[in-house]
Picture 1 (cartoon, rainbow, N blue to C red):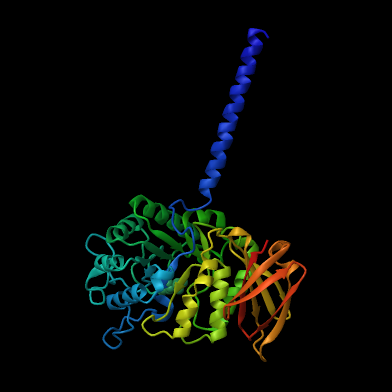
Picture 2: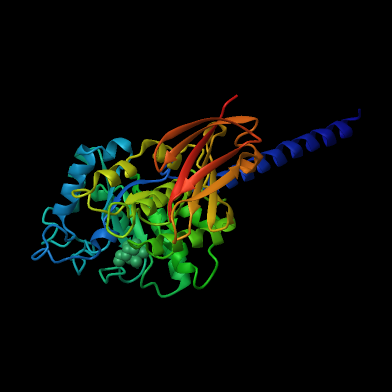
Length: 425
Ligand code: GLA
């Protein structure tokens, strides 16, 4: 080989090495870009959020027990720690809208309403932390919060610093009163970076896609880079109609939203309303089962001081929570709809699957539904055989099934049967 040939071949080799380095860097960049890189929400956030149950009740004179006040959060914190909620994973106690004073302080900082939160947020955070819990707070990307309190527009950095300084662990960032889609996107991104810059671990809960949908189809890849979870659809109400509309929206958009969910970033179908007034027992079971299948944040909005034993047992069901919190972190989807039944499935770690069958018919009594096991989990859930456990409405070991067999269930109107399938061999 001549000296020139050797040089050419060395240059080529160097070129290959450099190309490989660039490719590796590029792929690494892609990997980093996939989720908000704050190390939080590796499984869906669990906790309690005041909005659906307590809304914007600021009348502490007449309703001292149900107004948005320090007292409410101190009491709920106490119960979360003492009544088994924390032990099963409900960790974040979250304040929603209406905690603020109507004006910022003289230095431009947000401040809590001094009558309803006389100890301030920092002291509340200390108490919440002393119970082994974390504190969530609420603010808005626009000029005002949805209920008309001061918005964060123009104050993102100072608000992020204030929350970090108080010891806040989660921010729900709403999207009301934002005057343009550009301000909305810039604001959500700005706040994400501002929170990161504080150096405090703060889960970032967004409503960015919800406010984008009427104008543009959201870019979920981008949203996932900035948020730990994101609301897509209208607020949950304490009614079956509301739960159904959330499920319907989810199935209509599942191709778009299911693939983006994973450790660090989740679709948020809004709060669990189990334990309130509007859902029947079967409908509460459906919400719990489907929120587990959807890998949804489990943020209860109810009154933990007055909750039935039945609702408590459902919300604290460890097997169902284990499906929601499964470390594989893949969101489930609707597999089929026929004859007013829906079948949903979710892949779990160790090749297990969760399957939910919903009876959507709102007339008549329990209906039977037979499912062939070959059709589940892309043909793999029960291949060549599996052990099936029914988790809801009651836990029951159903035993060993072969791939070619089928399973017959009875499902109440608006109720759900939730199963866990595990490989037998
Ligand atoms: C919006 C949000 C709700 C709640 C209220 C508070 O409607 O979607 O979840 O935070 O604002 O005003």
